[in-house]
Amino acid sequence: MEFFEVINKRRSIRKFKPDPIPKEDILKILDAANWAPSALNLQPWEFLVVTGNKKNMLGSNYGKIVDHYTKDWDAAPDKAFMPRQEFIQFANIYGGAPAVIIVLVEAHKDPKYQKAFIESASAAMENMLLAATALGLGGCWMTGPLDDEQYLREVLSVPDDREIVAISPLGYPMLIPDARPRLDPDLTRKVRWLE
Image 1 (tube, helix red, strand yellow):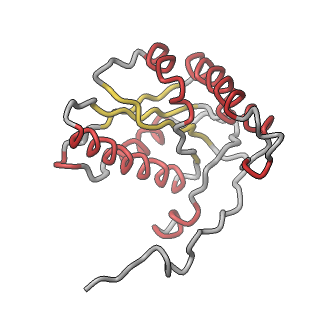
Image 2: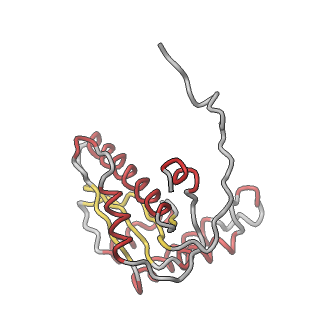
């Protein structure tokens, strides 16, 4: 796929085929993430590839988070990007994805460094999602599971000197949603030219 086609085809995937992902493809995706730009070239990211029982444990916990978070959605469906029960089902099994990728960074005491580390990890996350798209895979940038970060730390043995930045299920899409409209497609409100 051509570069701009990859960008335009990337979607947040929430339904996956159960097919396993070759380890070489996961490593290719994480290598793309590892080539992201980073503040001072410190490359502060780390990646956890979670499968099997640990993935199931994460899903069960995320399902509880979503169940609580969406308790009022039935009364206000205009707030929902998907039906409540469908969202809970997705969360419980991460959409059926065979793997979940967790992006970590070093926890730094200096807020300036910490902000730079999170921004750097965000660039790595974007590279990861674009690489997945280029290989016919999909993911979904998620922070919702961090609502119970302590549980994630315990299950994944994440030490206190690491911060969890984001999570993405990873797999072959069962369903690719239509593109959601851009809020300012002709960039007349989001771009200012200064001289």
